[in-house]
Amino acid sequence: MSIWKTKPLSVLLNEASESEKGLKRTLSSRSLVALGVGAIIGAGLFSLTGIAAAEHAGPAVTLSFILAAVGCAFAGLCYAEFASMIPVAGSAYTYSYATMGEFMAWIIGWDLVLEYALGAATVGVSWSRYLLELLNKYGVHLPHNLICSPWETLKLSDGTIIEGGIINLPAIFIVSMLSLLLIRGTKESASINNFLVVVKVIVVIMFIVLGWSFIDTANYTPYIPENTGVFGEFGWSGIAAGAGTVFFAFIGFDAVSTAAQEAKNPQKGMPIGILGSLVICTILYVLFAHVMTGLVPYGEFAGDAKPAATAFARTGYTFLQTGLIVAILAGYTSVMLVMLMGQSRVFYTMSKDGLLPSFFSDIHTKFRTPWKTNLFFMVFVSLFAGFVPVSDLGHMVSIGTLLAFVLVCIGVLVMRKKMPDAPRSFKTPFVPYVPIAGILICLALMYSLPNESWARLVIWMALGVIIYFVYGKKNSKLNNPDK
Image (cartoon, rainbow, N blue to C red; front, side, top):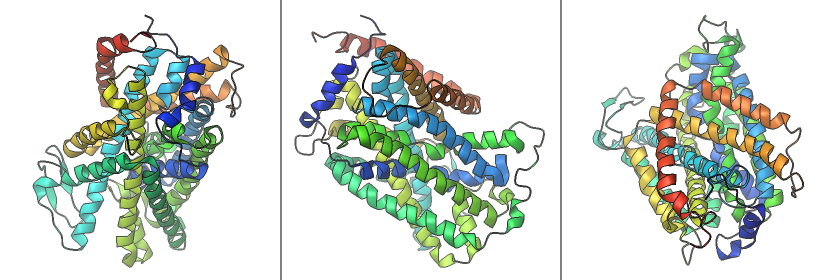
């Protein structure tokens, strides 16, 4: 049995053609774009933009967004080629299985837990923070023990400081509700996601349009603040460090590829969904950041977890503050919905390949969804959302996602060499330059992350290697066809 054995492309395509026996094809190109926008616009934009401006890039945080988007675009072009070639659920896991072999496929599938499951947990914690602000506006105060984890200090906008609770119950609530919704069906979930996407895009545009006339151009001087002598603190290195910080704002566009087996026309829909959502969000991000840093001097965003609300308060439209918070809650909700769906589809596919127990690929007889996987991750993600501080979760999500991007870019190079004549309805342009650029930019952003993130990544991946050799390798359907 070889751990480097690849899964033939013919087998993957056959699985896609048999999708009527499993997942239902219900998603149009428009739904896929909405799925991508739903995954992208969320915690990163509404929470991290101010921090990146105050600590790294100043008003040039707009350039940080562009730099991060360029890295995502290179990876996105590679994702689009794979998704159009191999329209099967599983995202980067499936692509790695076809190009680099079973062991690397397992590594990437295990790594994707950091992106999707812990990403959903991270956003769940942020969602709970904004919910508390909304409730406080109406005089509703939840017990302190039930609104944050034991290892974090929570400061509310009214000055209240909570020194560690017992559990973050609101975060667990939203994760559980969305997991149960996903069990009901992909089409139903996509319909709700489409509505939530419309709400938060309207609010982002409203912020840009209403805030534009209140911009003080003096806040843009200097546009690129002089470096302090420390790498990453302003100057051009600060723009690069800011890109690493706001990279979280782009996490999720690849979640579109996890729904390939549920797309009506994946060869056309996958590239449109992936690249279309990335272009739309990048334009909105740059305009949003431009307005935000024009409304408030960038230094005032230091340590501000709600920079959008802080900036919007300068417009005079204070009566819209509540609406802004509601829209941000809607934005976070759609992000979690897509991430939870993406995670369940990855484990569904890994289970179908025998690398995980069959429990994870059981399809509900009525709803045609991997309901047991949804229930499993409802519990798994809830534990992290309820008990782990958001700061510890965020960097693990970023480094896991960047590793996935690197492997997908490598996969395109391998596939072009091993299967140059395989049919591709979408081809990554300028190969090998685009994949190599994607690899280099993503590795550079990984390098900018704290050492603790690397340590946690190594521990997590070591655990995954142990599980593979104890269970996955022995039960692999590719290496054990008689099982």
